[in-house]
Length: 399
Image (tube, rainbow, N blue to C red; front, side, top):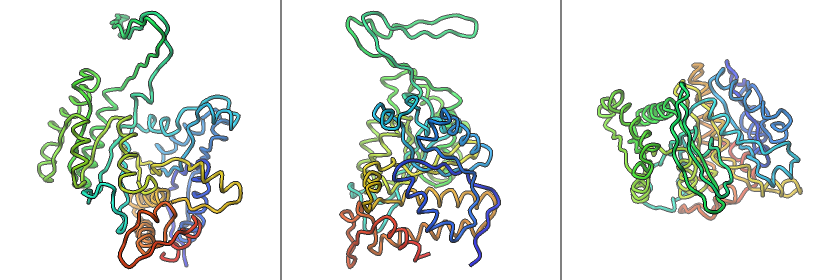
């Protein structure tokens, strides 16, 4: 069988632990037998990031800017325990945070729906897509310890004029944190969300807490409103979809009692937390797609979960694991599909869509990894637990 040819390489970002193992198997079993795969490879495993002083992460992001489409494996963001375990030079920052800051994009996370896996919230009949602003806030914060004394927020303009505000007058020890965002990044976030909602024909809800954070969150609210009114209102009305702003606690209540079918735009931290909540409520973090979309038309696809450390330690002992690779498969299919669309390669797009269908069909026919077995309820089908490799081979048979 002649393999499908590619024109432009994907930027391939390898990762850590069990997802790194799955990454290799997915390529060997599901992709390279069918596609003459072209990638520009970057090893974002923690060892290589430490070796290159994290330069390789920046290089991979710049390569994504050059080629337009990347696919990324899950990676470790080290804490103190990881610094000791891997004998690191320092506690390196999140590679996702670094890449997102360079690409200035919005992360869209959507559940992969399977007939036989009912969400924990039974009213959810359609996907809920979390749009997460991928810049600033707590992820770019400056923080530190405070003793007895006064902490101030100081802004100095280009002419050297200062505005000073007291944060807190400490009578005892404590901590201080200062966050920032930019009008440019917020505007990019807004346009990415409006464009995505129009593309998917889904209503868009945006939430912050501007009643408490009147200036910071109020700025998000105003920029979204201004851009909607001047650039998108007529388009949304023509498409028959709504844009709504409300407080985040109100959206949480609305989401729980909704049937889904909405794009929920969140600030950085809110989106980080709520995407995991939504993914788990749909069944599994391993059944969630994630794509970073830049307003300049740059795309980075990844799984929405971590490196599955516990399974990796079992694998290293020679034990068989049943780790769910679905989100990582869909990261590859998303990237291949987008590369095919941009390069006008319908065979590559068709292959990616067939691989997604084969993956879902395999589960719906009762063959799946262990995490899904207890969730799967379908009349006439008895779920069977497979190892990760056997699950990938079962998908390959359907291709």
